[in-house]
Length: 301
Image (tube, rainbow, N blue to C red; front, side):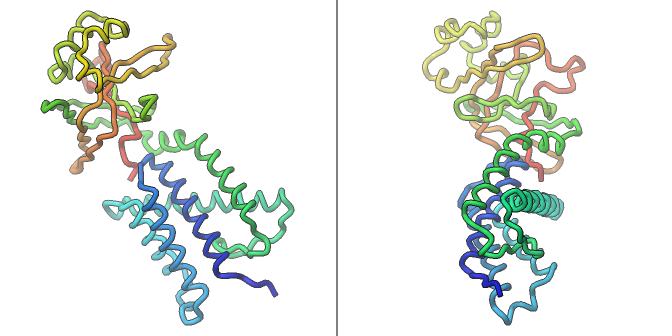
């Protein structure tokens, strides 16, 4: 008879929950405090193990209870604003669980570990090792890093116009932006996502010395840029390299706003970790939008 140790089962499930919730975080392109992921994973695993190992609670081991345990973890970590968001995250968690389970089974097969429990959550301790957990985690990490952008773009496949409000130096301006799945620009230093905006529409909130640079079409001349701008403004300026069709090694001048509000139907999101890239030409021929919104800034929930 195979013995199952509660502490081993707890640790394995705890680390697997962390891995699965981390995968969902990457798929949603959201930034969540690691302490929340650890707390949600810990509480979900604790409830699961209590139900499994306390005989008087075994009767609660069913689909409804397990779903409730999962929901507790999701609520703690992702804080979905509504039922739709909760359902979407729950589906992503379950899909991620099946993917991790599939990778685990593949590792079991190729490493000649020949026994995997029918229960999708438990693995016999004698057949599982920290080495195997590390292999599964590493494989999953590489897979998510390679394909998270593709999956996120699929989530936001439908083009949509978002109204945003940019706050900068006690000034603010509202403009329309197109959710552009092709816009993956980020600040190379801080990794902050970039919103590309037309100079003509945001010039009113820019300092005069920065306006002159764009009026003279010298935004690609870094020497001129540093000579024209005051030290105070330079601390907010970012240089974002980019590549596009017909142009390699391009450069986009941007600035760090105080905050940006993104309006979506009746909701609005406030982001601080963002860069406003300034484009000196038209983005939309029909003036339907004046900026390109980075999909990382829109929660998938």
